[in-house]
Image (cartoon, rainbow, N blue to C red; front, side, top):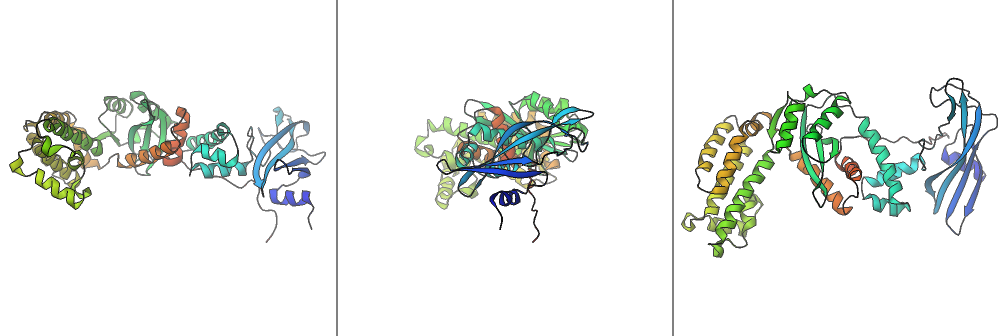
Length: 415
């Protein structure tokens, strides 16, 4: 039979010279305090250089929140030695159950990170009975470490897009490895400077700007300028999803203008013209076919047909697609539908980047999906108070980072 101290030493996986000195159980407050000590005369390795057998100079009292033991909130207490290294002087010894400077054990932090990947930090804090700022500190530390440990020497195709972290035009910008389908760099704000920041980050993590062959972006002048300056060797492909969004906006402008005169046909039809025909119900498909009948002579129907033609060109993505796009442009620019004409001129202005899609095949489709994951998490969390919280949350739900945890208390018994 084990006594309490021996039992706790076993389940905590403590090795010499550490041992459980005593315990204190507060049943009224559902709290268990475990006091750990080290054997008299013990010597420790210097945390700076690893020099062995350094004598103890003095000790500092510390405590850490641990995983609950049964129904009791568990706390570990220890007098942590400061050893005297011949080379580095007095240094605080690193305990095996917690990170330096942390008020939680490694196993508790592992549980926090497990929960943080599934629920908002506020819910994690409530579940574990901790203040959310302390939980955020744990999450930040582990995510920051994972971000900094990335090897980006294999990143060649990148997508960039900004997304709002909360209402009020507060943005973060994500740079995604399109091949590994995960964010490798997320920063606050949007615009040209974010691209320069990514270039610095890439070069400091094993990569080079020259290795990036393709960039997928929207038509933002700031992104275009930033990519041109920081990644001069990269081919820019303008995201087809963004192009189609602008085309949809043009169709909707035509509808809203025409609706003033043809309300009997166009009221409450917005979704019919914007959704893909395959996404419509059978009744909606029959309705739009009736509305698009040439006898109705709807300008909106003409704009809609131009949109479908552009959509088919992107969907087919054939070697001759650039020629088809030129034919489409000539049709659209002569349509006498002002919003469509303006959009066609935008296509012409950004021609090379749009045509590059037929060569590179890259798009921000992956980014759109990752942004959706982040927005869903942000909605569940009711927004993020700080930019840092938003960036950390993005890495958690959509990052390429790898969060790894090792058991600090390995089994000491044989099976």
